[in-house]
Image (cartoon, rainbow, N blue to C red; front, side, top):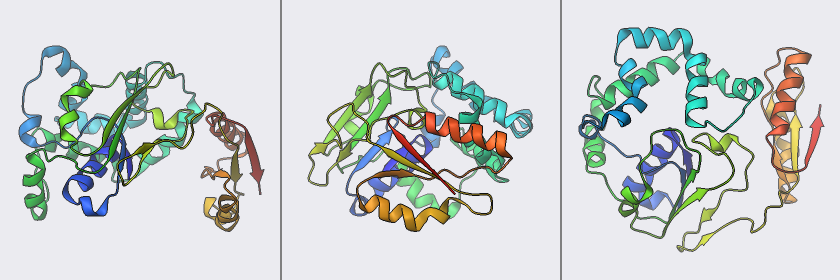
Length: 272
């Protein structure tokens, strides 16, 4: 399994509580299993300052403000967490569409309020929460990745290394201006830990392979390419198919151009 940020917390939890369902783990973040008790421990003032939005969300003003300015808020966090990433508006807009989910604000606010003990969780999962509150170790082979320009709050890797009792490696990606959002950045293939505990990487060179980008038409979505994608992938070719917003020629063209610019190597764009 692989996860990033909140997704990293999810895969950490599965690996810790159900190791029989997880052969290995790659995560872009530190060990993220926490508890309300841990969330209520005070930090040094400089560290507390980095979590300003957690306390903002604890107020009704914060909930209303996030609902009204969620795009501006997210862009601020992108700049703060990845200060050396000069992303453009089209790149941000590809993710920003997900913020318009009607459940988005409620989920975000509840998550941060729960951490501070200001909201209740689902009672049916209390037994699992009690196990997680103990900070369980992760026994499966694991790799943690971190950019060398991470502007988000993060501990030193040595602080959580003992949480991984299987084969383990922490890797700092250097000289790439990578912050906490680096899954969105031009990238090499993720390293992967094998089930027998030997850490391997998909490539040993900086040469990026060809990527075929399939662009769907106006009365379809990315899934319309599924049959073709399966055949191309079977030939060992790297493939991606973005969901085009369909907001007009100018907007969609800028969107596709930005998407192509994020790919690290040669690109073949295929349109319908």
